[in-house]
Image 1: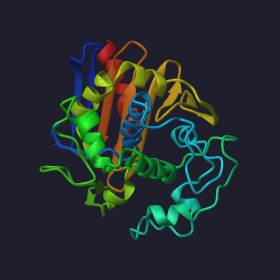
Image 2: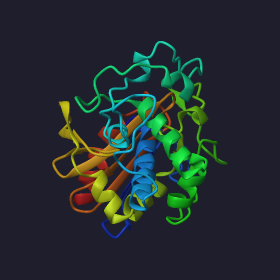
Image 3: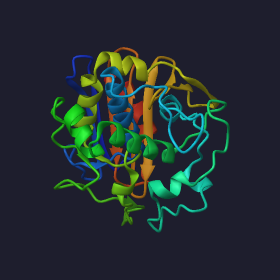
Image 4: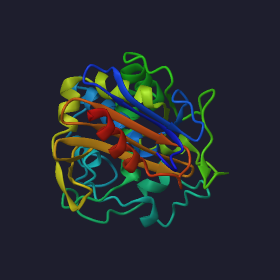
Length: 282
């Protein structure tokens, strides 16, 4: 695809690769920041702990009265996005759980969908507290090791990882360690597809259940589940951070697809996704 700088991979319902695309000299096995696709990992870890009885979807999330784990997962907590928070400055690296905890809710819990990366940061904190384990350890134990995601890392840059770019120029990357649960994962298109196929079926079923209608449909997506946008049988999450963009999709026929780009101004991952999905069905 013209203008694409990254890697894309579609896999069959069996997990076998059926369509691969690369651009800009990127090797498909190169780890990249997956940005908000990290929320898929966070939702999967949370629901695994729910199934094990470690926590409940109805557990409260202090310090906000009425906010529960369900609200954080479904983006209905009432917390805003980083841009809504005066104390947060991502470009300057000023972001912390303590600062987020001081922020007021913009809506009463459960009354509307509002995308909130800070909400998933607080979800990561909650997971750590109830499990009494660092979040990266939990992701490794519950997802990376059992699914053999050897090219995926949490919070720290893995060996051989790609550098992010903006219009071909190296971009200043964010400190991912501060984005636990919302944007802290490095991975490859192969590992993302292995995650999609390897997730516990009960966990994935819960993630794909519509929890709230989006205020406005987005490219056929009409609802949000737990860590996934939903619409017409498809479930996906996309993301972007300086230098990187991403998308991971679960298709109605059992195929999965992942697109990672290490140039935020190159061809959009969702456009690449549409092309490789169409080509893989031919």
